[in-house]
Image (cartoon, rainbow, N blue to C red; front, side):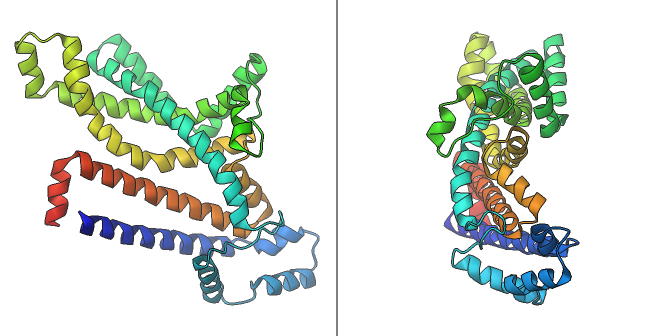
Length: 319
């Protein structure tokens, strides 16, 4: 198990490094470069050359990346061109707010999705199952930005129940003190996760309902409710829990879109602002955070799978 975890950690570091390389190269190949984005379209060629020299953009790309990597290893993500602040400080302020939104959306999605998945599986092939399946497919296929737009139009303009702008504040406590302003961003963030987890739970429950131990329990006269909630439910959770880690990066990335739509003061809004201003250090920092979150989510999923499924543990030992 230790060897397996070490291999996964090494692979995680390689993935983060590759993502950093690809992002760095792509950003520096964009037309205009950061100088035009920071100085504006009216900047003269002399001003652009001076900016590039001051920031080291006149050096070959491998030299620029090596300098960035050395600074990264020392915990220096650079300074924002437009916000006059270190990128690490901006991320430290914004990441907890994004994690708050992601955690609330994911937990609520799971609380709703798991019982819905079981409810659908028990009613497989019936009208209620078909309706619920159609709704979840529609929800899963709807882009986050479109769902956010629909929520704003319906629940902030047509029915003015909630504000269109998300909660604002410098601390988590200030954000939580405005629960009404968190409703629409949380619902928008729940959409895809709710649909995905309900589908996973439905499929897992159907697999377990076809197992021999369920037929044996029914033959003994065990009530159906007892079979579902005491035997099928725990076994069905195994695959869903292992999928949670893989889905965390998806929910995290979705939150970035939600933040820009509702003006939520998290990493997503920071990324959107940086993209408009070609603020390369901030863009690289945000992409790095997303890459690390993706790798950690996958690693946690593997560890959970390793703990709850003995078959994976044996296979890992053999490898």
